[in-house]
Length: 256
Image (cartoon, rainbow, N blue to C red; front, top):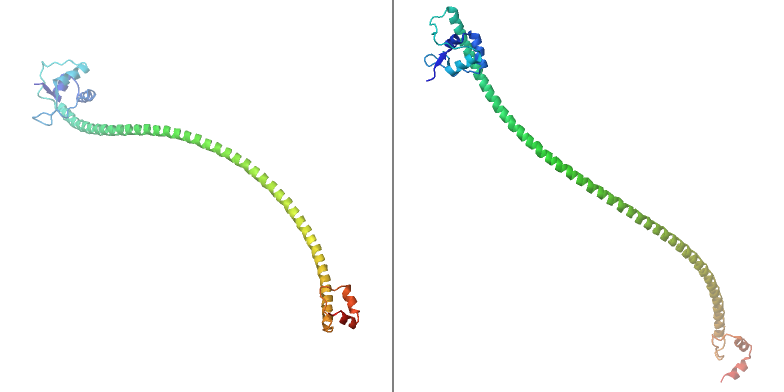
């Protein structure tokens, strides 16, 4: 079984005051919160290994040949009580500190996981960004090609439109010339038609005059005696005029 020493015994064998002893415990990372005497839970103890460690760290020689005095001066008892109270406070602080360290460790692990996730997300975003840049570059090339093709088609269409406009202008000029020719021809035809109409009007007037003469002749012939042979209307000539001058008896002799 490992030999143990109370705090009073440790201070005695190390030849150190309680305040310095507390500093040595803190520096050596020795926690006495779990090392409690079964006989009195107010009493803390050190193991022989811990006591040897403190002696080696601070150059002390442990001499166990002289037992620890049982009776202590009153002032030393007060110091021991003060030391025990301070140890209780330090134990609570260490316990709280351990809990904080545990919380910090959990938080650190959570933050580490979050950092790993963030780094993985950033890496995926970098890959996505690279892919997006590649797509943008390809899209720019495609747009530039389409713009070039549109410009070429526009130029071709412009040239075709210019040729079409030129042909339309030429056709319009031809149509204007043809309209002028037709207008001139129409005017000539109207003039010719007017002349022909005048001629026809003159012929019609002459025919009306001839018709009037025929009507008069026919009326005269109707008034002649029935024994006189009615000459044909279509033969109004100088022969009819001679018959008019022939005596009536001559006409009777000519009758069959």
